[in-house]
Image (cartoon, rainbow, N blue to C red; front, side):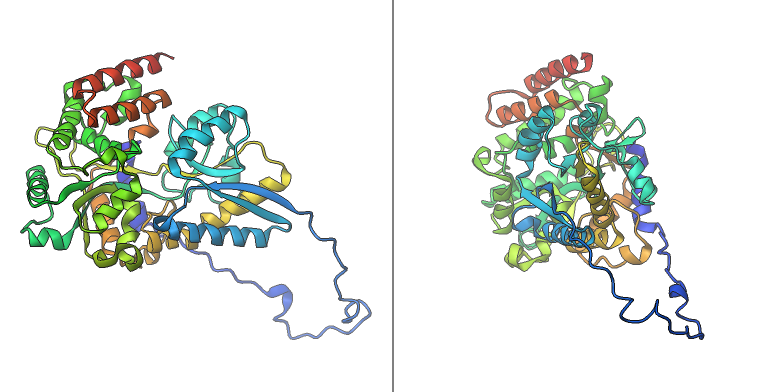
Length: 461
């Protein structure tokens, strides 16, 4: 699955999905003949019979597009909602905005267990989310719907939502993870964009020595530091290790994986991360970087739109660069692989009545249209999840998005974040132990041993 990622990316860049031009004779309106008036075609008799208003119905829709940084994605969602409501008589969507981790790890699991999730909701792919809920019968199989809508061959990568030929969700777009850096601050310290591991650590040390935070970090939500840890594992233990934990081909307490935890712990001990990071949120991390207090920030390419928006980036507008994690000397496997995913999108409840099913089909058609996917790319820097034409992708002007596309095109492939490949119990434990490592309550080796014990148990079940 991971080695197919390069093919997927090339499809983003060079696919030539032709837009069929619609033409017709408009019911014979081009004819020169003039019909003879008759009682059946007079203006009086052509009046439409009054129809009963459609019976109102609602469809619940939960999203995670909350806050200033998600405003472009929210605007796209709002337009899709309005378009779909106008298309389906009587339909009203009931939108609920919920913070990402609350939806994923608290609300949705409880609702799935009880069998009462929203009709449409934000959903992650992989073993711990979409595939687990799909196997439990909670998710709508979208394969026949995509076939009905003529969209079966439109998506670039549905691997993390597909099981036994059934499709249990649709990614809204793709992303990679890497380092953002303050170009002006780097220049003032005679630093260039790091291309090697030694240059990356030199930059971190120089920033720290000059009173700056090397890497902005908000670790109150454990998934934030785990983004960086995940990529370090991909470098030290190789890209195949991420999928190898659940298959048993990779071990959390192997020397190469422990080496990744050791490097992260080393950076913690050197003070490279935000002081008091365990008390700071994801949004706080961005604020520290934007205000110039931190020189670098590890985050997803989905953040790119912030840095071209003066209302969010302020003095840092268009002065931010992006690079992927450099190769680790002695690291296993292809060091050009990136941490890349098509793992976050929308899922749909399997418990739908006839009206709700019609609404869901219209929502899918409108959300995953060329227009909306191109808007996501141009306005928000979200890589499209469907094939777009050369003309569409050539419209990209944002320098960070261009850099991301270049990185992906030059990569050997991609590995996913382990939260989409390991079992829920393993990921939950990883969130607990990374916070303990940061707090000095666990060692890199003990973290690996604890996770492997949980992994062994999960693999046996």
